[in-house]
Length: 501
Image (tube, rainbow, N blue to C red; front, side, top):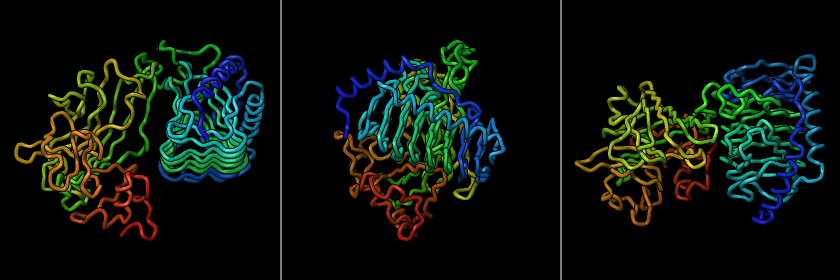
């Protein structure tokens, strides 16, 4: 079941007026306020999770996986007699208070509806939203806080909250959701590489799957919290008299740059460990199709101001392999015109381009003295954006590409469907094994429906040996590629029988 536009609009107006009337009754977390993760039985972590705040279990005593997980600005506590014991009591009081608010007249009943860009409601204004049973999020859900990063949103689920992989919940102001609450009658499962804002309460358990990030607390009242390369924060709402040191109208407690009025929020790409891009450089031929001619890991921090407009881009990269006879370069095209880039370091802003195209290097052989066994080479790119777009318009899906020259022809290899830059040789498209069509806007796809470059949401992709077709190593790669990425999404990570040689 999906919203109609009229139903959504009228319901949101009602929720907005309700929020304005009750904004002052948001309960305090009490002693639970310093906890980013709080569970009843166990907290189990896998991978490089980063927790900002305290972490604790009560009445249980088991906290495992730290390290490799990291706890910053906090400590770990276990058992009823520890600080976690009192925090659990106060967390339950907070949960019950929020549930009481959600039952007052004026809340919006969304039972049977889906949330997210590809499922149903795409934008919600401040208010109370109730689901009698389960709720799901697929795609992108925007919480239009109308310029108030402390705006109140309460979501109650009679049973479960589940997000699809790569879903997003964002606040239009760029806020972290200090007064956003997800109240689950049983459990919450945050899908792979989902980005969430707010605080999650679950009567039973909370499962954060691989790479999911969260800007608030994770509180499981009666069971466990399970983590896998995630984030969680002990956020606080602004006090009645907010402290705003830099005067940018973002309270210090929500401002990642409280002393800089030009910057307000860090926005990290997902997964936090980085995304691997691997290339076959024989395009327009398929060549040996081993996807190891250039292997590079990328991750970003996009810094926005109080109006959620992009002001700075920081990219971290690792060149992991270049097993090729060609002198391959690597660049990234960003979705802004070239003239908006200022104060660039760590890369070269290419002359003659329409958009902002940055080259990290032009010859991978001079970057890696020994390949592929040598130590990866790292790079940090940084530039300011003048009069930048909103984060929503700038996005996180950029255009990485391999660059080389054959004769006088500038060959660029991009991800499937991505456009070449303004300097690419367009005469090569549609030749040999390439089925691109410039007029139709179809790029970098072979006659058999395969790409010449791939993105893998992991920093530890095990690329094939030289001369070995990737389809012979990863046995479901071709099915994944030819389906447009709709089947065998775990082709690169699953080690079960039938997945790889």
